[in-house]
Image 1 (cartoon, rainbow, N blue to C red):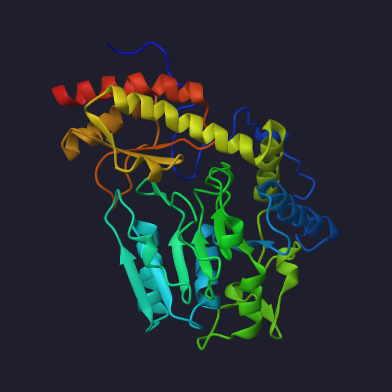
Image 2 (tube, rainbow, N blue to C red):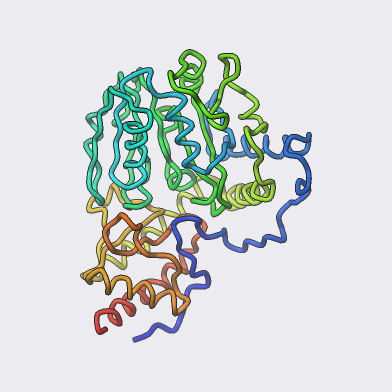
Length: 372
């Protein structure tokens, strides 16, 4: 039967993701609007983005946080173009974004000493093949496959190379072993439900040392340049951005950080995501027609939860359209390159109660699509 109760918030998109509970744009601090981002006020507010992020994430001493252009993509590309080439590189990819970084490394940077370790949607490559003498490039959480790295045990504490980690749908949702990560990137519009177009770049002291001791043989566009005169451009990590950011988006991000702090910090948002995943997990266990794309439960994402359904591709599309038409779930179709199915965002900005209300609708929509 058609369920009677609908989610209060039907936005389960995997990016841009849902705003936090009780979000109201009218409550943002907008004193920076109409002001230069290079004014004392602008720099102070952008500096807060860096310092408050480091504080909430519990970053080790010496790690730097900067705001960079072009979302997570820009942050990753900045790292690849600025840091790679000094050592052989191992690239681990198992979904579309990781495969994109591999393509750029091979076809744009044209590096010769590249080892690629790949897997199909739903599984991980053998992470044990990582060579501690090589640089490593990988995504912590495959946003389009729902497959995450379960831990950092495969990364050597004695490594000589750098680890470059795209963590855009993992930061503020999963516990990351920061001491094993030298470059971490993410964007505001994922786990915290912020606005798009801005990336975050986190560098370890080892990454800074590479930047100051190695110059890549290719030209770097201005928006990729992290050094001046052979030294790290420290201003980027203190509020002096390379190009002009949206101060409205900055205010929105600071609002999200304040929400995280107010509900109990990093542990609280990770717990919310885990509880949300548990709602979906219980439903999948109780119904034979729906399955996690990630077969290994230790590798299942608690943010971008990807599911397959025992329907043909067209009926899956019909199911998704029905849910949207009922105002129950928006934007939950699988990524265009992934197997047909559902992708339900379960990050901390989603309420557990809304997922509980959504689950019966999945069963109803599947039944409707099956009868068409």
